[in-house]
Image (cartoon, rainbow, N blue to C red; front, side):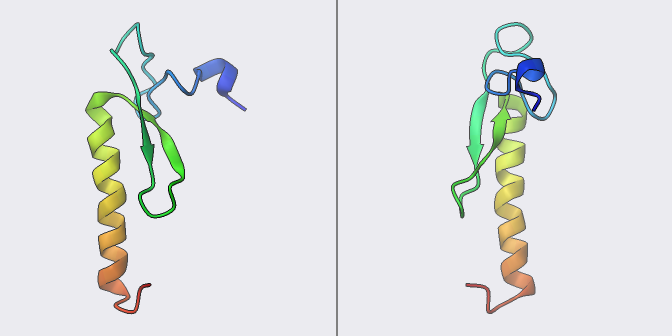
Length: 68
């Protein structure tokens, strides 16, 4: 839907800065459990999003100990 406006593969999904102009590059972040693409992020937000994804999984396991 917004691919033409934001160029999703070259724009940080967090801060909307474009690679090559405002930032060096964007990196894909995948959900480690489902291998689904979460988005492309600049180096400043890459680890933030990746760690948040892992923390959400850890919290789900603590809340539901029978979690598969």
